Image (tube, rainbow, N blue to C red):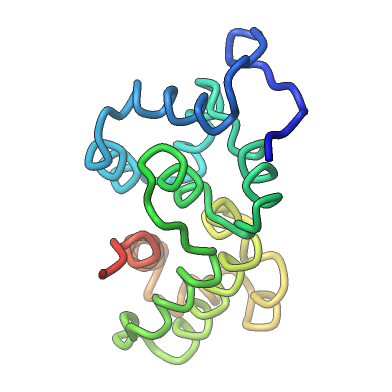
Amino acid sequence: MCSTSTHLNAQGKLITESLRDYTRINLTKQYDSLDKFLQAWNDADRKAALIQELEGQGVLIEALAEELASTGLNDLDPFDLLLHVAYNMPALTRRERASRVKKRNVFTQYGPVARKVIDALLDKYADEGIATIEADTVFNVQPFTDIGRPAEIIKSFGGRPQYLSALQTLERELYAPVAT
């Protein structure tokens, strides 16, 4: 089923092909292989910044998410949307990605408070996506406000550098390749 809505590209011109084709062509022009896309994704300090950059270059992630939702593919991370459309990879929901990380027990070196924070970050990711957990304000909302003040939360990891390192590990685990 094709969407009847119209979309404009980064230059303001009407997109005449399907949104999926347009996305695939646009993304593969920039990253001519899956490996190059994965490298760029994994190298990005903040995934939200890479997503913004792609959107600035005409990759319409929200419109694509809406179109795929109409086919039953809901709650996908932009990463999975792009992999699925541009490189024909199977898509996981954010909840599936978060669940995979929880099952792997990657964060056993942290104390109980830090592990509680990591679990809450995974739940937040599953509900809202990567941009939310990368935001500096993430600790100002539930359930983090129940765990402690932002400074206390950061301290549970040993300090800001250790927290940022844990967040990088969390992202690496979220986007680890799916074992087949």
